[in-house]
Amino acid sequence: MKNRLKPKGIVLAGLMAPGTLLFLMCCIAPLFVAFYYSLFKWNGGPHKEFIGILNYLQLAADKAFWGAFKNNITFIVWTVIGQIGIAFIVSMLMISRGLKLKKLHRTVIFFPVILSAVVVGFTWKIIYNKDYGLLNGLLTLIGRADWIKPWLDDPDIVIPSLAAAKIWQYIGYYMVILLASIQSIDKEILECAELDGAIGWKKSVYVVVPLIKNTLMVAIMLCISGNMKTFDQIYVMTNGGPGGASEVVAMYAYRVSMERMEYGYGSTAAIGILILSLTLIGVSNLVTKRKEKGLTP
Image (tube, rainbow, N blue to C red; front, side, top):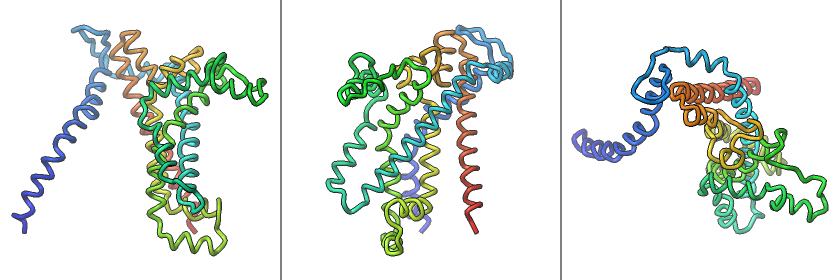
């Protein structure tokens, strides 16, 4: 039996090897390279000055970095609520009996996911344009011209405006994840819940959510990690403006590395993004586990 399994193991290892090597080269190796350069004062060229953890001490006291991180936190709060929340509502509608043309709806909702973030950024930048944008045009059409705002030029609303574009793009992604989990629930459980009077939002909150809580946690972690490193869409739409009101940590690391030519400190900022992302994910897991223990009789 062992001899028969060996060829299968070799084939399996051979199939996994290219993907594993690609992952190591593109994801793991750059982390070690970035950590290595973060220990140096390096502005390009062949000469580097080893300074140990001084870059990290500078980063810890860098108000611009922490200001960008604050913007990231605000952006993440909006996107987690919007992406996961709307995706859950859409997923519940997808399993309802009254909805027709479900395959068409799934395709249309998922379509923005395959678009480039740059394309989405340019599209929403046009939508938000104060003079000829679709949004302000619609507000004028319905007689609410008093609601018209410079959506990308007002520091108070620029982050929610950017988050709306991100939410629109990735609702379909999280819909697929949540819908797969919801459809795996035994139909008899949902039918019994309906017989007991749990219909509509009651069924969603008290029956479905507890049964898919692990999937929800995975979706939240993916959402946090993905939006912590968001860059291209914001770069296209606002370039961090107005006055740094929409600058996020990934954009700050880019500016330090590519505009100020401080490659060592830029690498430190990149490692800082990784540490903060892992911290946020860990905190979200801890909060969720504590809530579960509190609900357990």
